[in-house]
Amino acid sequence: MLATEVDWWRFLNPLIQLRWYSWIGAAIFFWGWIHQHHCHAILGSLRENREDNDEYVVPHGDWFQYVSSPHYLAEIVIYAGFVVASGCSDLTIWLLWGFTVVNLVLAAAETHRWYLHKFDNYPRNRFAIFPFVY
Image (cartoon, rainbow, N blue to C red; front, side, top):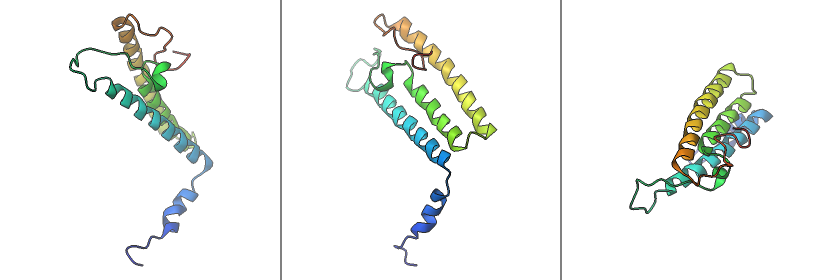
């Protein structure tokens, strides 16, 4: 076989053998990943072209309209994608997801308290990490 030729079947065969829940898990993973990227871009843009980088600004846009730490929520969604992709039957992945949820919920609660304390005009209808729940 020439170096420029590609045996596409060897590449595609493992993908074809994936079960339906693996594809759904991958879709959930990428959905979370895209939102996490958007949220990090929003946070990064808060300090662009600013001379006084010591001043804090309330982030807006994407999931920031609903929660104080949407990048944490997106991380939980990413790990949920792993759980689904595994067929929801792998205890290790469930434990990893559980640790991630607990860790990020605690961090989001502190972040939410900080925002409420720091900004008088902080939106009171925003939740810490889970929209309309907490």
